[in-house]
Amino acid sequence: MTKKDSVTTRERLLDAATAVFTEVGYRGATVAEICKRGGANISAVNYYFGSKKALYREAWLHAFGEAMKAHPPDGGVTAAAPAEERLRGQVAAIMARIADGNCRDFAIAQMELTNPTGLLEDIMRSELVPLRDKTLAVVRELLGPRASDVQVQFCEVCIVGMCVNPLLMEKNRRGGGKGGPLDDLEAFADHVVKFSLAGMAAIRGRA
Image (cartoon, rainbow, N blue to C red):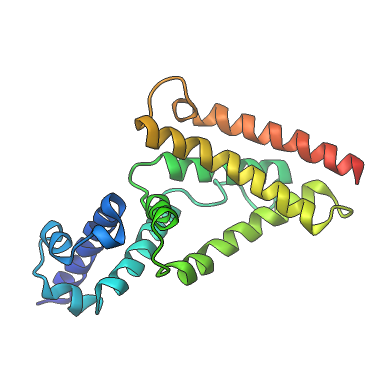
């Protein structure tokens, strides 16, 4: 087997694994089905990953990495841009990842919430905390120096929640459709940002 063949087989297994884990979760997935979809024999999982558990972790990291490439977390907004624009970029990026059917990291994370395995806690934390820190930094900048840590955290949770929950609920309910936020992500992102800025302005005024 050449090095090129080895990389191709590994990538095929990762792609197949993310699809299967997204559909049925870790417990429902079988190595046999993953290998069947990946066009590899069953021993390939042990050869490339060591175990189904290790493959699960690598599959989420693979899905997350692909999502970051497709939709950079800054939304294409530079670090030198005003805080309002940076917030808009982050909001738009989160929504784009959720709406993109090829991005499976959110789907696997949902599976973990409904049927947790505990296998992804550490790697999800290591990858997601830096993203959250960037949003917290923008929120703190918008709230001003007098805002408390609790106020900053509460605002960040509300903003991310407005990005994530409506889109996931709509996708789960009807796989998209007409009349919902999935039909016009730009307009929905604008609404979330305007709503968030108004709320933070009120909090900043009181602080």
